[in-house]
Image (cartoon, one colour):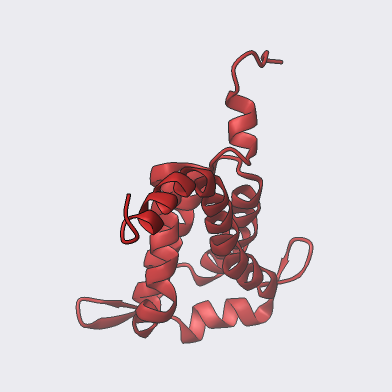
Length: 156
């Protein structure tokens, strides 16, 4: 080993130990912006905010094939996004159903992208990358998923 390869060899040895922390960081990094957005959509338990409904009715448009189309069922969409933006991040942080939760947030990111096309570089691309990593790699060892799947755990 020479001076040029020593740092790379050290990183190769260190990488497996960092992978669980990286997956945990990805879960939190993806969860936080969605959860914070979800909090803005609610005025209390079970009560979607009027501003969230207004946005889906009046402001948000789907940019598809050169057209700006209104959201279908804007009240339902406001409720669905509000629920998903609170539930899916909680699942991610817990590491429970991580792949499904990340896939849900990837779908939401795609919908947000066609709603706000100019946000791809600053927000949507990093969110999509984090979600894809979690869909493909799973939650890592610091998760409820891993605890539930450990050998010797009895059902019930």
